[in-house]
Amino acid sequence: MRLSSSLSKTALSLSLGVGLAFGAFNCTAVQAADNGPDLNELARYASIDRALLDSAITQATYQQKIIDTMNRPYEGKPWHQYRKLFITDKRINGGIDFYLKHEAELQRAQTELGVAPEIICAIIGVETFYGANMGTWKVLDALYTLGFHYPKRSAYFSKEFANYVKLATREGWVLTDTLGSYAGAMGMGQFMPSSYLNFAIDFDGDQHVNLFNNTLDAIGSVANYFKGHGWIYGAGVVYPAHLKGIKGKPVSKATIDQLMKKEWNLKPADLTRAGITTKVALSADQNVRLFSFELENGSFEYMVGLNNFNTITRYNKSPLYARAVFELSEAIAAGYQEAKLLQGQYVGKGGRNP
Image 1: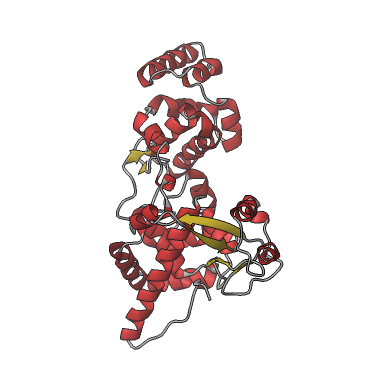
Image 2: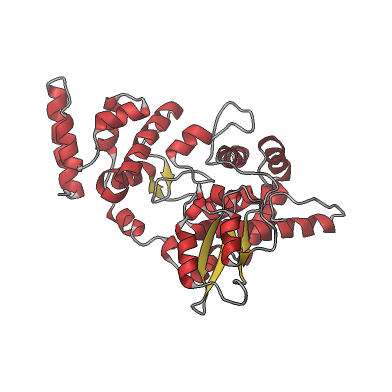
């Protein structure tokens, strides 16, 4: 049974008061109040003092709107609707401007970390519109709500709650001051606390890591995240799948469904045997995945995702998200090239599909 926010906080405050009065804290009381994971285990996981978690919980507030939002995510929309949210002239032009303004830092990220500038721009563009919209929820409240009051994702978000407490302690942040998304993501690139701890880097050399208002750190950190999750510079990302079939026999829906169930355990030969091809010959030893995207007329478009598409899904597991990021990156790259041509310069391909 979940207690209401006010009752939960009251019960928790009382249990804290009793525990402190007797020189010890009652773990069972906190768990009963929050109906969540074991705080001792979370403290061990994050390598922090249990008392820091106790204090953080007493400062957090349950937010029902966060639960409501989690239950109707953008990724629940069909592709033709989802695409319109992110592939817009305003976002493309904003990405081109961002690329031109920060091209030296983006090129450095490409050289040092092997990640295409347009992909970095697209991630920041999709996540926060190039730093303009970094979220208005208290990160503490978001992670507390999802970690202790959202059972189907509690295992993940409770760890991120502990990671946030660890991060805030390391950085000297006031727990209740940091703002982010309804899921607890922070900064220009919307890093979850674990990603902030593991992949955020000081890219401008000022001895601080700041993903909120230091664009250089945000650029370097997004690139470092992609490098850490297997991005291959210059490799393809996703290609349209051509369902040619075998000897004039079309590819059946049952075959398509079976191939899609293999997820990333699919090889190019599996597609070829089914009569599915791409415009570029795929190396036989790589893992690929077949995706379907619903179009406005109710039909479906099929795409073959490669390693780099998989890397984008490590940022957000939705294939809709990954395709939106890729398409935005392609548009940004094309606009950047056009701008450089107008300046009398030419820049070669980065992470775009060959």
